[in-house]
Image 1 (cartoon, rainbow, N blue to C red):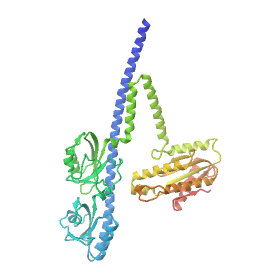
Image 2 (cartoon, rainbow, N blue to C red; image 1 turned 135 degrees about the horizontal axis):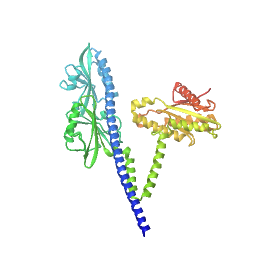
Image 3 (cartoon, helix red, strand yellow; image 1 turned 90 degrees about the vertical axis):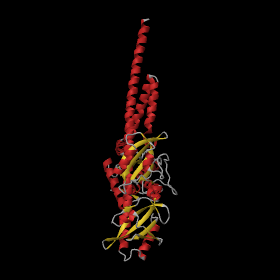
Image 4 (cartoon, rainbow, N blue to C red; image 1 turned 120 degrees about the horizontal axis):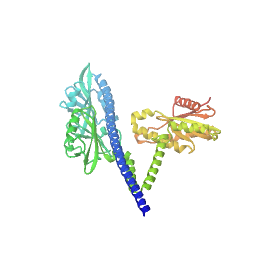
Length: 494
């Protein structure tokens, strides 16, 4: 009888320990995931703020190019005796045909604008004309074109003659063209970016081929005043509609969240340093935090595991720990973007193979750089550059054997170690095959531009008896391939 009592007491004590353990684990996990969620929110906010800042910088940079282009035209026009002589008019007609300008006009000092069509209009009351006549670049607020009756924005630059402003060169863009000056959406079209004037007028930047569209219809429309619209949404942070107006007036960047119809949105904004316009970006919280959605799955798994017996709990925790270790090992060895080995893992794998007894016969080092990759990043944006690198990694995996070692050892620098090749010509054939496959890549964002690469090949042990020696030889061969005009390969000869 006593044993039964002792047994019950043991089970009771064990149960209390298990319950205490479960309570501690539950509280700890809730706290842990609370911190994770806060970090996710912080990282999301930082990403959105950085994205909006990059958008503003890019928009400013492209408009700067447009201004410089127009100033060059204005300099030529200013050299003519009459601003609207045949040479000047032929010039602006040519510009209108070959550019995104909807209409180009030369405005004399009295405000009479002569357009590329030959029509004339009095624009002396327009603010952009008055500002440009003061010797300043100008970007107008949206206005209705006197020629087409449609909304346009005007870029204007002064025309100098004899050191004095004698007129203005103006070019109009439709609002859809403004949309082409920013990057593609960060979240696969689930967000919406737009400009807001100091008065609260909304200029939509997202557009289709034929009409301006708005993916987030619950937030804003171009027919609605931004400040008034913000009064009708539920802000869930300290920063509210009144604070937004203050930030816009002070040209201050910021980010906040609001809810409408059961959906939570992020709203981030930043000044573009022109006309006191603010660039705004709205995206659903679910889309913004989608990269972290795996965390919610882990939370669900842990929540279910806590309901089960302690034994099952420990099994689940052990399983999660194993998966976590594998994930850590994977990310420690692999390049996150391309899925192939990173520099350290590549070198370790190659050195281990070279030192093993299995390494007999010839081995080939192939070093490759994507040609003019920095230019791709600068012109088309880092998002497009990442897509190119990801595709290059995929092609490498398709081209080489599963036993070969592939690595991304730098920004646009890749390395392939081909094991036990029967003949040197095999490496050359693989380089040719790789060259052809790269030329077949077609990214719409690149507008027909082809991807090429320069490759250098060195053989082990002919080029050296260590990883470092063969690496240096392959690097020299790569340099020769670049020096020979790129889009090809060179084999190192000692």
